[in-house]
Length: 180
Image (cartoon, rainbow, N blue to C red; front, side):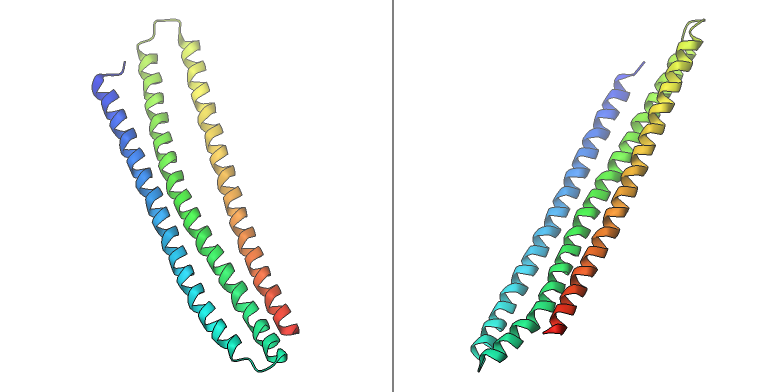
């Protein structure tokens, strides 16, 4: 049986986890805001520089050359921004995943202890029911671990695909800029 102290400790742990996750969410938002402020400042400065350069253009040929020279850096900056954004999101997600895994492992361990305790105090003849309960807990644990592995593999694949797409986009822009 659960004691009052165990229930209070469980509730305290849940609240601590909630506050920890809230803190991590705010850290992720702070990083996102910082990234957007930096990107906005850089875009403003680049726009001012570009405007000055356009105002100094003497003919259409020079304007086309100026525009073409801006395409590659723009694509590279967009790819870098996307990578930073992805890093922030995946880092925050990783923190959430760790906390959930830890909390889930703790809950599973407590449940297994509860089942073991119940098994020790079970009346004679209930061995089959206890074995069934332990088998169910084991199957649920295995299923949860399989889902965690699948999610990790999917996240790794998404990260690899994101890197490949970013590289391809930047390289395509480089190739297009060289052809002009």
